[in-house]
Image (cartoon, rainbow, N blue to C red; front, side, top):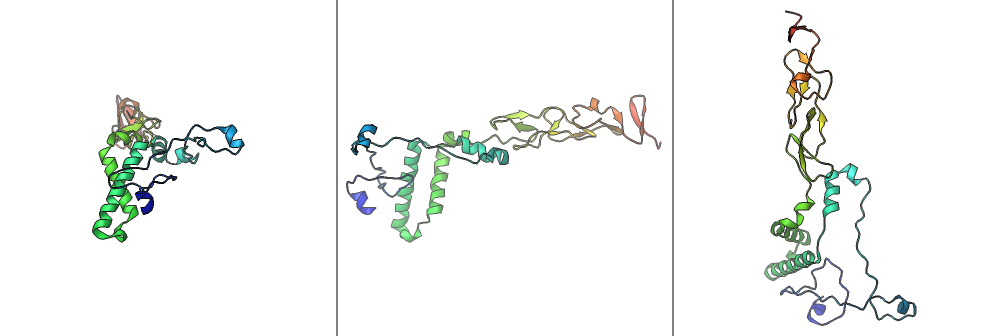
Length: 220
């Protein structure tokens, strides 16, 4: 690598790899070959470039149902060539700085990689904010795309995060935006789950009887 960095060679380079970046931040020059000529290739003439392939991401088809957060991040994650070039330059400079002070043996590739990535994230929030799903406060829930937080619908209870709305439990009612279910008035209960307002607590609990507009204990 040292020889390649100091000389002029035609070589292939697989990214990410900071080995050929110099202290000035100079990257190897990408050689643009003539467009692919399939007819010449058949004849054994290789004067043109190879066919260009666009990279694709392949993920487990069950990922979305298993972990919505990871699926959201994986589907939004992307890095431009400029991003990768900048990361490689930062990595090379940091490695050279550590090696000059403490020797090559002091370089911890994993720790260095995390530091470079962390610094990039701090300096480029606009690049990665769209990769992060909506993490909602209590009383709200994330839409199906995990892009927006919505108010918890009446009759439901929303714990926040990425949890789906849950039916309001019996003996309680849940107005819109509820983060904690509200108990029905003393002696009253709802006909089932999903009560939306105090008015849905229209039945008297066992051991209570309806007197005028109230539920009174039968033991009284």
